[in-house]
Image: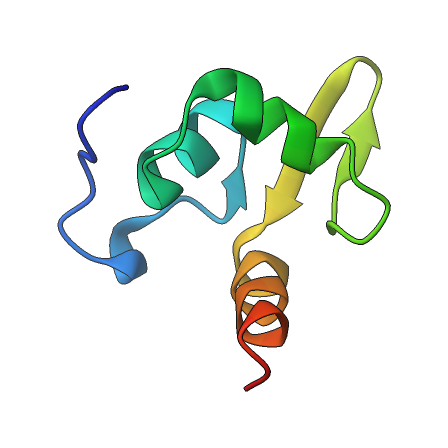
Length: 67
């Protein structure tokens, strides 16, 4: 796993890819791709590329903890 290179959530890019998600959640890149393929995960498909808007990622995380 790669070390999180973002000092805070405000420094995350506006759209997150699998590598970003892997770093933020401290999970493997394979698990990040599994998330990107889940129906309840806010993935946007652009050609073969999969990204998640940062604000939708935070909303999804809040929903996971019932906030």
